[in-house]
Length: 345
Image (cartoon, rainbow, N blue to C red; front, side, top):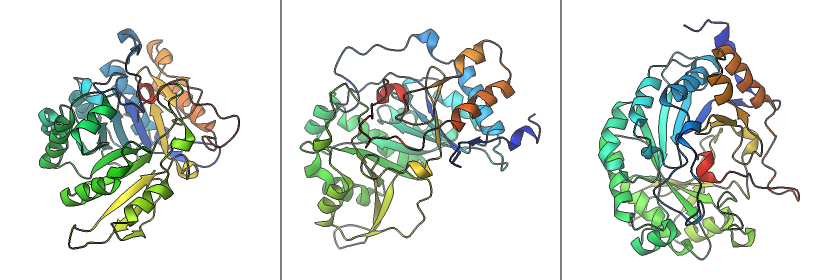
């Protein structure tokens, strides 16, 4: 049992931000090859012996939750559904107690492939929320972006998550100029009709080398202009807090129900000042930011016999040195060496 003194620890940085949200990458592998995320071929997968075991993942999460104040866990990849033991990991984590005495909130970020077969088991294990990628409503365009013809499998996964009671279900769409910008309004209409919460994401320089160009970016302003042609939008009065998406309320009309739409404008309107996230890669490295160029190793100390307190101290030290922002607008900005699939969403 963790002592009350230990439970007062937290993941605080030098700018006063406190990490409460833990993103846990369970694998660097994926069954899609989305153009903005991975090259078509030539990926070098993480050796199995470098990947954290289930027991190691659970231990690090327990330290984060019970010793360091983590309140929310999001399982990511690659594609987290490729980790066959995901339900077992989630079930173990659902038994942990946050500093407030509650179980941690658990979610999954997925492409939805195979979720129709596992949604009930994941929900029963404590994963009650889902973010699912869907970049097009056109099966052919979906296949062009994902480089796999799996559109209807993704839809099955989304429908299954809703059927078992996961809520909210957020649809993540990477908005790309000249690729899916003509579908922006259709995607919002689809989500409003089905009760999903659409989140557009500005494309970030986290994919294949030389695959991102700022002049091709579909920005937050561009998206709002495209949506305003069909929808009555107004800024949400709800406090944004540490949420990555800026929200707009969508008024009901004769064509669709009311709802909301979010835009994650990491490039043109970053939310770094309010970030409350910390990240754990599949090989046990702490990353304090998606764009961090440095990492802090927890796997080594873990496997060398470090105590929970020692691991917590290492994690706290890494967090303290978190940068004020990702620096994407600076002339000296360089993207991280890891691509998105190797970091975790």
